[in-house]
Image (cartoon, rainbow, N blue to C red; front, side, top):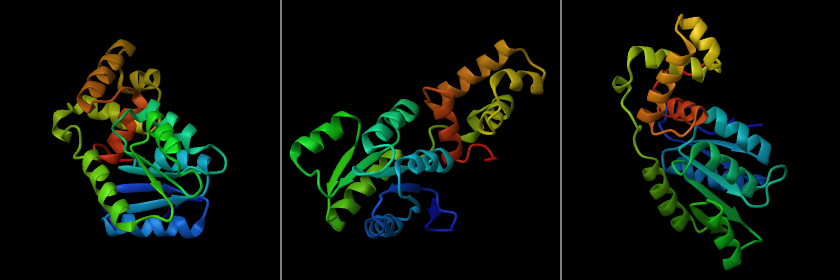
Length: 205
């Protein structure tokens, strides 16, 4: 079960997925020291759920996760979030150069061997968090109608039901969604929702 390590209203959230409690705690503490709120989980399926809920600025995955593997999670997150979401792998046993190359080719941004070198991890994690950067769009850039549509998307309302709820045509709804995606730099509705929640563009449900 996911646990938030910090209850402060901190801008950046990180998800740590590691089956080993001690390693998970160490990674969480390092990320907390960088100003992150950390959600930690112990298996792959929980990691996917945590990313969907938390819209993090960084995801750290242990290669030996039970359930979905780190490689499967990385592939899914890249399909949903594109390259904007930083993903780092950590591993205790698979530490050969070939393992690192395979992870990087599959879309990981960093690969850390355990035991973690705290100085190296902190420096590279700080760089990844900086890459996540500021919001892709200022809230004022969205029109009032686009904000309504985006808010409903975040709430899980289907486009056809958005049209009915706002008394507009489905074609108009699709046009609003296209404009939202373009302004957010998102490649899909799911990615737009993740950006909106992460960057506080609308109220989360």
